[in-house]
Image (cartoon, rainbow, N blue to C red; front, side):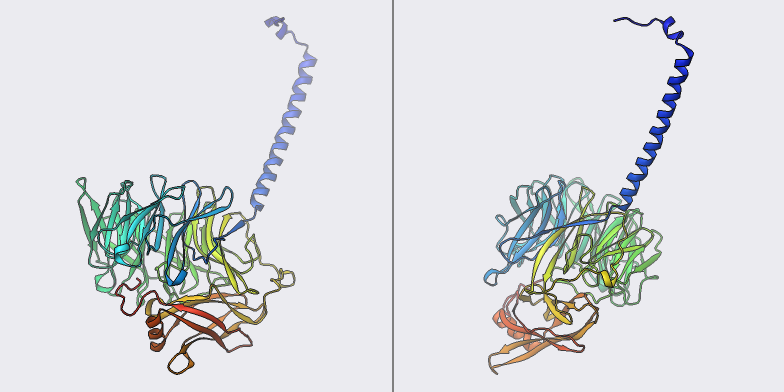
Length: 564
């Protein structure tokens, strides 16, 4: 093959060189223009990409009671489930594989009285969980492999495990009723007993494990310093807490530990330095504040949900508090459910925003930017089904979020539990105008109150049962008094044993806590299960068909192991 010499290259005709260079220049300009246009189109497409939500109904062949959602390192979604066959609670652990949407549940290896409280992805590739059981002897820390094999390790002291985290030493640390403990990935377990009840725990910026502890005069923030010989020194700090403090959740952010103080008299947010200096902040909180969940944000601040004010809040490292509200978020009075988890949860999303669920209001889901701009997602938008109610939310490893909830079918008066996947977008979806709003299902009856959930209520703390209702009206609010009646054998008639008033906006849902009187509590405890009826005394032009259901007591009068 001939090879050009240097002389041949130097004696190229001048006209050919000019034509070639001009053509190359035009081609280069066109390429740049095309690239710019393509980038603009791509950017516009990216900016216009809406948030998309996909649901995975949990069809397990039995009544479901999903709780405590967590995402594994490989993207699988794990959750606790359980139901009441023959009056006894049966616990299961569920797994959703996003690759095919398949849901499986596992129970082999769980105790006879297992109650799953919390999940965390362990450093060994397994999911670890706290199992509080229904009696102290059933308490355990457990792990489940990606394939569903369960192993439990009995908790030696301190009562029921409730929270579990990965500690600074790559072991699992847990908070029990009256102990903080550690379990290695090989199952070696130990605990340090304490006289008062623990709250949540977190790994601090100093490499130690911290926890919330006690209430009132006994309230404190605790620190566990573990030594190389396996011993530990526990220090309790309380200087700076109020006389009625109830510290609960705790997170690490910006070189400090942060906690929420659920004191009814003086609700606050608290900051703890690594040397134990506590400062509480109240200025900026609403008068009726009830700060339930806190989480570190990608902006360096700590974010929180305030159910008492119906607000999402932010506190800076210096302690400046700002709260943000939206018409789709309704303030409501907060009650713990039987496992002590919040009803409204938030988490940092992969898009730089904080995402949260709205269990009571016009919307089911929301996000807030670092500057405080709130976007809400109502049922019927972005893939959210009509009648959906969201609960816990968690971030996954693939730029997505997950939440669990339920979908109410008002025609059949049944609910289906569901796990939903969120791919965040850059949109700010407007609400549809009234004349173009999608029609609700034909089974929805305007001006009607419906009860969401199953036909079984559980008696929980202080003799209460929890009832979730929905206002199935497109224009008018629903107000009235929900009352519960039980058949009294001795009198051969029904007796009203509790009632609760409510007022819901059109289309809104809310969880009510209905307290039974002494007769009602005694009847339920004596027989463990009773038939009852929910009915409505309306204050507005609404109706509700009386609903026959069962009430179950998780303990009998002679049972010392009360639910905690």
